[in-house]
Structures are given as C-alpha cells and as structure tokens.
Image 1 (cartoon, rainbow, N blue to C red):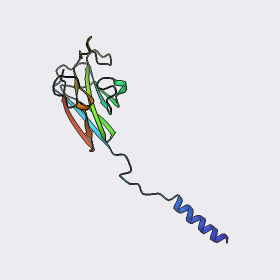
Image 2: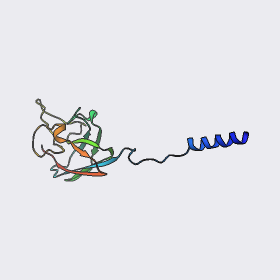
Image 3: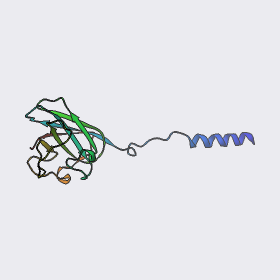
Image 4: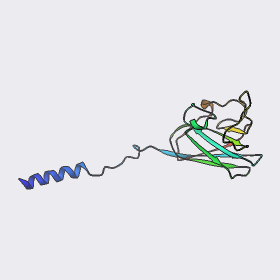
Amino acid sequence: MKKTFFIAAMTFFSFAFAPRPCSAQASAQTGNITVNVTEIEKVEGNIYFLIYKTDEGFPKEKDKAFKVGKVSDYTTKASYSFKNLPYGVYAVTFFKDENDNGKLDDNFIGFPKEPVGASNMTSMGKPSFKKCSFELKEDNKELTLKFII
C-alpha cells in the first residue's frame, strides 16, 4: 500500500511541476526603432527624442512620452534607438534643445523657437498623433527624418 501511494504521489508531482514548453506566440514580441536625423545645420545643444504610444501629451510633453532619449554627441546627423518596444503603434517627435534647459521653448502663441521634427512630417504644421503614427511590427524599424522648423 505504501509503495502504491508513493508511486501515485511521484507521478502526480512529476506532472504537476514538470517544465512546460513555452509558445513563441505567447510571449510579447518586441522590436527596436532607430531614429536618424539628418541635415542638422548647427551642432549645439542636445537633441531629445520622444516616442509616444497614445496622443496624450503628444507632441512635446516629455513626462507623458512612452520613452525619452537624449543625444549630446552628434555632427550633421544624429541617431537614437528605442530598444525592446512591444509591437504596436507609435509616433516620434524630436527637438534640439539649443539653450540646454531640457525642454522645447516656444513663443507666446505656442510656435517652437527651437528646431523640431516628427515622424511622417515633411513640412510645417501642427503634428497630430494620428498623422505621425506608424506601426512597429518587425524586429528593427529605421526612420530617417529632418527638422521641419
């Protein structure tokens, strides 16, 4: 009787605590987004890169961005990579902080005083999340952008 109980208990525990195979689809897929800014005219100040998952705070509230990056060492080109982002919809903005105060300065009507840019923006105009958004659905996505102001 003890032997039968022992075998039953061992069988139960071997199945209950056996490692289970992990499905690749069950784990969240992630990718990287590299933002390249070209044709930078003046090499001074820091360039901030902001990535958003929603329109909240878009396009310039750093504290509401999903992630923020900063590049201090650049030439007429600058790059920043957002790594291990869950697949999904994003929008990117960037600005050059020429006076090193950590924020985008604007005038009394809200027009930027420092160079700015955003994904999918090629001319002046107020960027919206909808207009600037794109989908990350691969391991690596690269954007090449320019300052629009």
